[in-house]
Length: 206
Ligand code: NI
Image 1: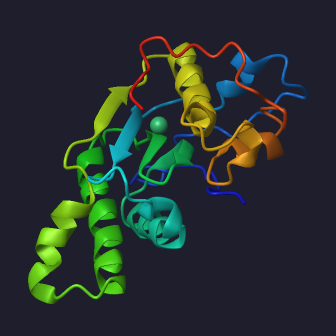
Image 2 (image 1 turned 30 degrees about the vertical axis):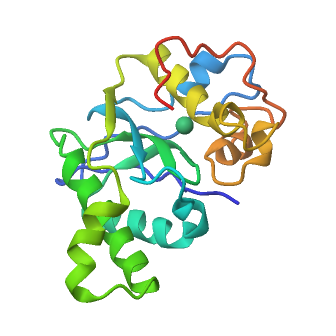
């Protein structure tokens, strides 16, 4: 299962801000492979958590979450560079269009769209809906502005290794809700990539 399909990002004036993706023939030159785009807008790493870390809503309702992303992405363009969905939280890297750093609004809309659907599925009364919207997600999220190519690579690796780190699977490839599969399909990473050598120093944000 591929969670996302990268598309070239265009700014509001219609000017393409992403160059065509260049993929190396092997994974030996990963540093170059990872530098797939001329980043014009800002690139950010995010960690977003459910309020109740014992719930498993994100993977249980993965289609609802995907739809929330799809709708918000359509209304407010941004590019998903990498993503992993865990049962109670997610990690992702976005690149926003040039001159647009309003990721907070996008997260509000994604959270809200997801919560609304969940609330309906759980048949929560309208009067409780607003409270529920606030209640499903943690209000705050972790945000980090990607500094350079090396920083980008470290965070992509962190994302793809995360299901193993949290003990959900033993092998990276076994977790379905991850852009890892996209990277394999595009020959950026080998299917047996095990995260060996990934540096988590300073990245321990769960
Ligand atoms: Ni995590």
